[in-house]
Structures are given as C-alpha cells and as structure tokens.
Length: 207
Image 1 (tube, rainbow, N blue to C red):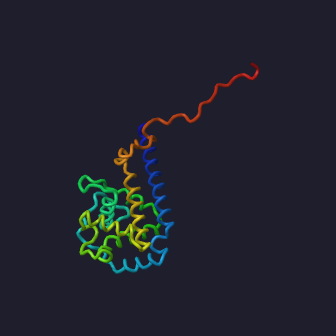
Image 2: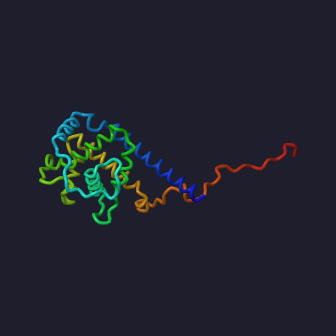
Image 3: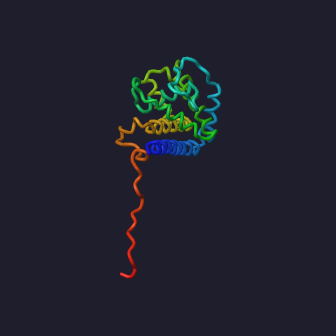
C-alpha cells in the first residue's frame, strides 16, 4: 500500500509539472514572444551581437535538463530579484523551472534561451552598465528589472512578464514554499482514497 501511494504521489507530481508547463507554453507562445513584433525582431537582432559562453558562473546544484550552467545562474538571479528572495538560504527556483521548461515545445524553449541571453547582457546596452546582470548589486538588479517592466519597447515588457511568470510558477511549484500561502499540498498519496459513491441497500418492490 505504501509503495502504491508513493507511485501515486510521483504521478501527481508529474501531472502537476506537465500542467504548469502547459500554462507557461500557452502564455509565452500566445504572445509570439520575440518574433511577433517589430520591437521583438529588433531585440533579437541586438541579442545576436551580445556575448555568449561567458565564464565565472557558479555550477548548478543538480544535473540540468534544459538550462545551461550559465542560464541556470542567470535565471536564479532573476527569480531572486523578482521574488525578493534572500541571497543566503535561498530557494532554488531555477531547479523547478529547469524541469518545467524541459516539457515545453522547441520554439518556446528557444525563446527562453534568447530571453535569458538578452536580459543578462542587456545591461551594457539599455542601462550602460559595465557589468552583466548577475554581477550587479541587488539594488541595481531591481532598477534594471524596473527598466524592462516600464520600457516603451513592447518586446522588453513582454520579456519581463514572461520571466516574472516563470519565476512565480517555479517558486510556488516547490513544496517547501507551500506553507507561505497556507497550502498543505495534494492529498493524493498521503491518505487512502475515499469511496466516491455511497450505494443504498436494495429493497424489495413488493413491500
């Protein structure tokens, strides 16, 4: 029985991740992201001029399915700044998003790769900073995020909204965060399934 409940719990977790990945794909894909507007095409063109394969990123704590080591560090920094997480004892939101993104279509995964690259190195272009996003102070990171959120360039606002959605769904997809919103987690796998129907006892038609 315990083994069966464990399997049910794993199935529940897999279904939850697939459902969240579907939400992300619908929201990101629906916007057409970077290829759906003139400002998006311009942003992509600028992204092609930005560096890639830079060094100095910390290694991820787990094997990755989707992110590169560089992208993992970038997204973790983005999530911390958006969600206001502490530097020490932080929740590894990027672990959950890495799992979620691995279930998405190729076009959405490609857009996420581009978004992270442009966002990380866009500091040189948009804010004239001498450092990439992950090397900025928290105060400068938050100021940089506001620039994307309030930008007159529609594609930048779309990138911000997509990163915010990824961060929020990744954060609340982690069981260790559920207590902050008073959620005790799914019941499936934690107690025996209750009977769905209560049947009446048969009675004779002749009485």
